[in-house]
Length: 115
Image (cartoon, rainbow, N blue to C red; front, side, top):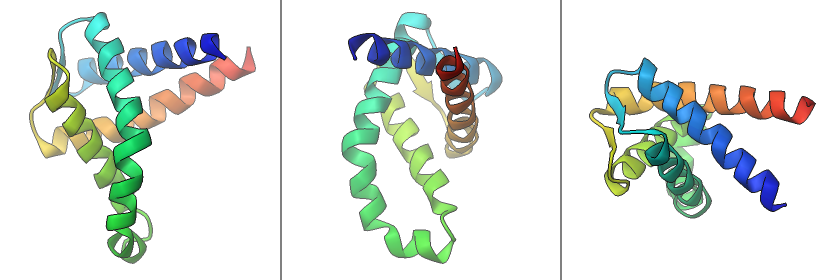
């Protein structure tokens, strides 16, 4: 269980580091910062995201679920405000970064589960 958590954290940190290299508005100081940011993102996804999802449910229903990408961007932006050395400069960067981060994390998790 602990090994799965650590592996998942490292995979998400690696995906976050790749996103920071691809998107100009997202900056990470180093991989240690990526690990801290991935941990904070995980905590925010557990505690903050469900609350935001409930509060924005009508908008999410009207947009057929596309507003969930905006929620992901908000969570990424909040993590950028919390973690020192991790910066998200604009909403567009957060939105594009959140989409790419979700794709990369999912892809890497699938590859790991296959091995």
